[in-house]
Image (cartoon, rainbow, N blue to C red; front, side, top):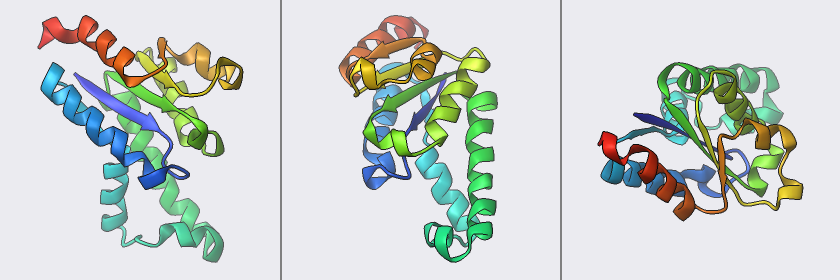
Amino acid sequence: MIAYLSGAMEYAENEGQDWRIKMTEWLQNELDHTAINPVEDTSELVAANNAQDYRDWKNSDPNRFVEFVRKAIDNDLNSVVNRADYLICLWNNAVLKGGGTHGEVTMAYYYNKPVYLINQLDNIGLSGWIMSCATEIFVDFDGLQARLLNLYRDEK
């Protein structure tokens, strides 16, 4: 099984890499599942397109910025739709200024992929749209991991 690790990047500390690394290791060790980490995928895209300073292009060269980010969007949505079996999403304040996580959750829902949402906002702050796209909502990673073990342990 393959999990797509959705969550804030653009406005997250370390692009949200830290929780994704921990979750990838846990999925591999506990369930023998693999993970798609969009932070790593974007890093590969950056290297392949000589776009190390692409974030600067938002102001200096908006057209070039949009062209590059569209490649990342295409890659991420393709992974959600065509590669992932389910989506794990960290929903927190950093996600609110971005747009990618919203789109990934919506696409996963639309394509009937389970969406396991760790919500770090109060329910009033959680969008009704996102709440309704989620298959299950958890308040922390421990709750998510217990549920994933319950769902997938026998498949290992």
